[in-house]
Image (cartoon, rainbow, N blue to C red):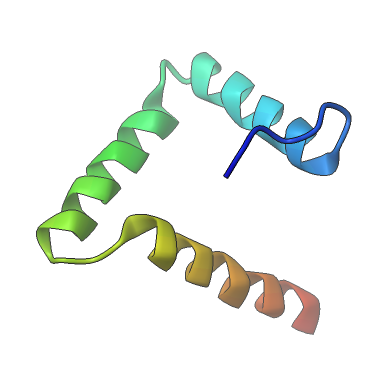
Length: 64
């Protein structure tokens, strides 16, 4: 996964995430790192599982 194109929706979302993370004292990053460790400890792949979770929740969002 590379850097999103400046001006794209993905880029704006990345910047928003980074801003919120800095405002929270890097708590979002800390939560992600802990989650990565938990998933790895049980033999899972965080990136794969997170991508699947995003897809599942995107479908829920569209169901209303």
